[in-house]
Image (cartoon, rainbow, N blue to C red; front, side, top):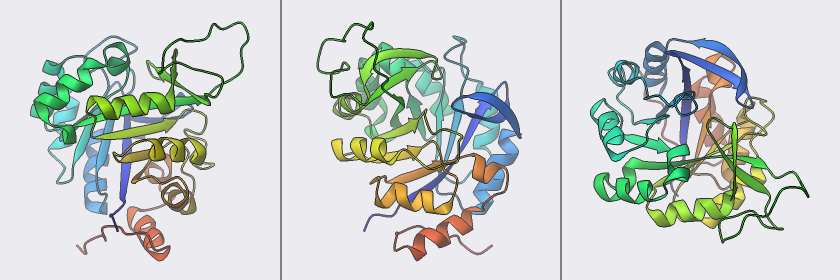
Length: 272
């Protein structure tokens, strides 16, 4: 049985960790380096660092903040936001990241995933997909091609921090990202993100069943049962959460104990 992972997420805006609801109404959650060190001690399996405004502001990721975060960690670190080129990716790996997450740049240039995977290895490249349920719109023209929205489409890919629609079918796009060489997929439901009402299990399962690479479920964790459901019903390989950990609702050890009690294989928290 493959071991499942619990991954806290640091959404960073102007050097501070923030958390919102469906990508808006952000509130402060602390210093990224301090939180990273805390989660490292807590027994998190990995950590994700996302500069959530870098792409929409067309700026580079804050490398100095990434370096401060990486210095506190002995667990894998994934970094995303504002990465546009192979050189950008190389800079982040040199700054201490173990993996990079590509979303907006991958939609603009899908070959970037292929180039990056060839250069750094599939295991270092994460395809991030922000998806929202499709709302019927008779005035919107259909998108042609195998990756575009069709009559059976249920979720659309959005970019620029959820601000821009793409016309891409999320499940088809996930398949394409896997084909291009991504080593795993970070899948966020914009409909459930920050609401703490549970992951979008239909979306998670649809993507997880469509690809042969690991899928990280993101967006909506409110209880430990939500995490178990993402794995058991959503077929996720890992669960990402922010609010429930940042604001002290649950500890990493509690989450791991609960998942283990449900028969889910996890890495136990080592005694200090």
